[in-house]
Length: 505
Image (cartoon, rainbow, N blue to C red; front, side, top):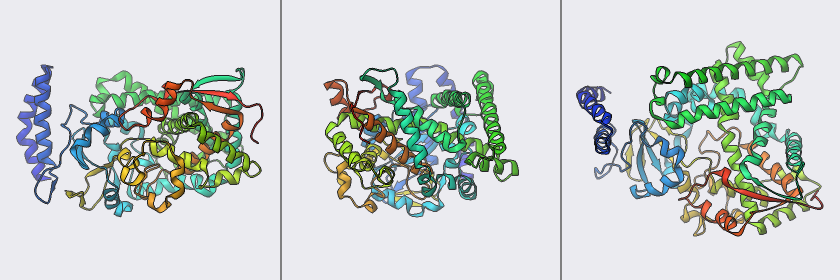
């Protein structure tokens, strides 16, 4: 620590000079700044192999490092950064992140995962911290244990199984509304068509039944949250507290959102207590009132569950629909499987060895919710592919490298082929498949997410057969869009729905 302080003092005049150069706004000045800062950061954060060779990685970029590339261009950058080897380093601002791409390194890193710490605010900076920094998924140690204990009972496997009938009813009602006032055949954008189902299904689980006015208010709060995340993903000075004074309009929007979001939860809590409901919001907000949870821990975790996961849930579900539409032979097999189990649908949806369950796994494999996992660190020094990584250094998993690893998944790893899971031992998937996270801190909502996907697919296929509108789009959906080198916005994918003359059940 003292060494770093001395170095920072010594290089301060250089940094001032670099800032002046940056103000010139020339490409040469920017290249010079980024090159010099990269050298300084490498000196401050040495990582070497046994022969003394330093770790490779892309040059630091002003001011974000690789943060924006990681979030917005992940699939493209995965391909580009392969040239740096199986272990390389990127920068989140000026914070180093070690990227691992091999199952054996994932295993080595997660050997002590119960002691890992999540990076503060995912290394994403000040504005992100105001929105989500205190949420369950981004805190560590005893705080994480405390917050998780308040939410865990509502999202355990047994609790979600008890909600099967409600989830099924929500899915059936949602699908029925899809066909209202439509012809026998129509086309929808997959993400737009499915987005509200996982959002409101999760909201109902948290709050119980909501009025139409409350549902509209909650959706509007979600859109305001997404607008704030847009500022986060623009990076730059939003990474720093100085944004409070530089972006007054955005900060006022932030404060207004947090105030309205808190009031919404307080109001729903009072309403549910008044009618004797036992929904999760009642127990969670009671902990806030009693001082067992901070208001920020509760609000940020509710934001994480509902708002941060909106794109995740929408992406997962829309890609499942797209893959079923693009692979009609597999779709027919799933339809036949559902028909065979029409008298025991809840038992069928609870199973993990059905073709439908494998379709969901395959969708999550081909389209993990992020190209790079949330950064976390070990309190122990790690040796990853020969490089000695100091303790407390942020490490992220290149999820696409794991999920498309030909050594495990075969030469056709990019092809949607759910039957591959028939012959794979589930234990072998532990370090070879990234779906809802890895280690001891997998996503709390995985059971609910899986159930929502199953029931939605089942009720959708009960009413419709699915197709990709034209041959070119069909080809794109099966090959180009599952490529590690291509990212096509989910909302651009269209699916044709043809009403069935008779339902499956």
